[in-house]
Structure formats: C-alpha cells, structure tokens
Image (tube, rainbow, N blue to C red; front, side, top):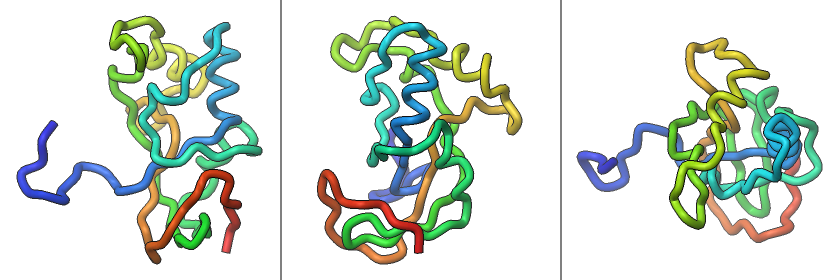
Length: 130
C-alpha cells in the first residue's frame, strides 16, 4: 500500500499490543506466536490479555512520549504469514475471531494511539497512565 502523499496513512502513527494478548493467541493456536507478524510499534510487557482494549481515550507516558490511545487495530491477512519466510503458516484471523468475535465487523488485535508529545522511547521504558 502506498499513500497518496508523504506522511499520509490509513491508520494512526502508533500501535500497541500486550504480551498478555500475544500469550492468549498462542494458547488458542497451541504454538508460540511471533509478535513480529503483527508489525506493532510497541509491545508492552506485564499486561493482562487484551488489557490494551480497555485504554480507549486514555493517556500514557512511554519514556518521554505521551500517547493518547484510540481504537482497535483491524487485522489483515499479512498476520497469517511467518515473518521470516513470508509463507502462510498460521490462520491468525480465524483464531482471533474464534475467541474474540467480530463486534465491529472486523478482526481486532492491538490498539492505535496518537502522539500528543513526541520524545524518545527506549526498550524497557515504563508505560504509565497519566
């Protein structure tokens, strides 16, 4: 996909998913699930499964950045492909829909956020609600 203008996007600039959500999906799949297949900007540790879904409208500090969490990320078929080989190897969409349903008509996994205050984020930085 190529946007019509530089900087344009169909989605928000930041995406987040929790290790709890990834663990739940791995449980449903019966195999480990590589987080890279979801192409999220931030993977959060220490969260309950799909905890990030409850943060709509919440502001978070991540390192020196302030984010405002928005809605869910609508997943696509790219997530069914192994991030190393590009080969289709796991029906993530069916798995997610089987235990989460499709309440918006889409298959959602993770959330979007907008940057309210830019800054530096480093691996291991705390994520704090503000």
